[in-house]
Length: 179
Image 1 (cartoon, rainbow, N blue to C red):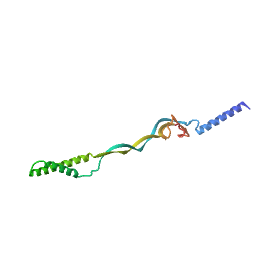
Image 2 (image 1 turned 60 degrees about the vertical axis):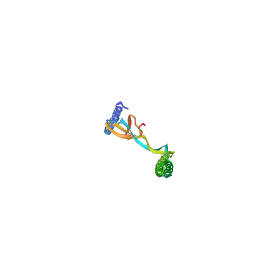
Image 3 (image 1 turned 90 degrees about the horizontal axis):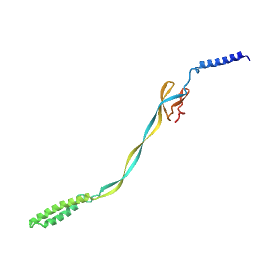
Image 4 (image 1 turned 180 degrees about the vertical axis):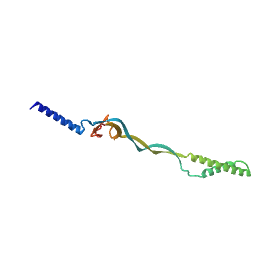
């Protein structure tokens, strides 16, 4: 074969490849293979979980009153007051002293029984519960700001990306992003 034939063939093949590249536009246009990550912000949600919190408490109760009107204390006090009042005076003064002693004794007996009933208590231990809210926060994704071919955008991703995001056919490939 002739050298000039080989040279012509080589120039022809090179010309065809060059013309094909120019015609398809791929010679002058390079597609980016990665998008630059500008920022990555975690997206979180707060979950509130109710739970019971219980504690034992000592409670003082009043015993049920058997004699609400304090009749027993009044009667016993009046009787004792009458007996004591009867010891004083003479004649009709004895009757007045007995009546006054009965009235004063009745009042005193009523008050004594009231004080005794107020102090008649017992204690129990009771469980008191209340509902409290426990909060926990979890990351549900990342809002990622990126730059691709001079354009900026934001996308939500499940995993935090590295410094770049792969690009295929001009689109971000988010399922291959590092975690």
